[in-house]
Length: 174
Image 1 (tube, rainbow, N blue to C red):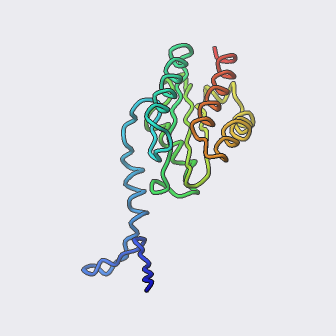
Image 2: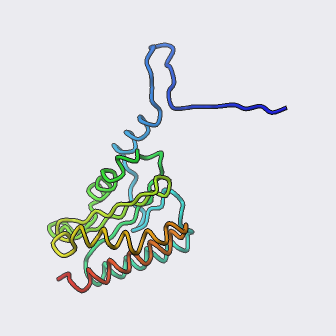
Image 3: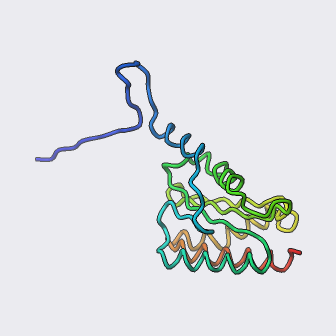
């Protein structure tokens, strides 16, 4: 005997008020309105990195910031946190809310990665946009991050992508 069940928590009727509540939408709005505080430079909400991999990335970024003052944040974003269409906006929201980059220099880079949506976004602060174009950023995503991501090697892609960003920014930033 085979029993098949289908469950959905997408929409629930509130019997007392006769209204419809969209739980994912409500959760996403609450998440947007009250982002968690960052824990270091790497915040892995999708659990795609091991603890050791997070430490390596965090250390790499910290050394770079100490050398250049450029701040980089890496955030992996679970599909429960946003829609596919809002991933770019959430990445920017993280950067702005957390204050990635130094005030007055706007020298922050926020990297949002969603394995679930198979997308990523790099948001450059205004100070970074002057030395690293959107086209160059896209090229780094396409040629360094994505090839490893396609092979489910998220740490490798992130590590090498950050190193490439650091190489370019380190040479150009003053």
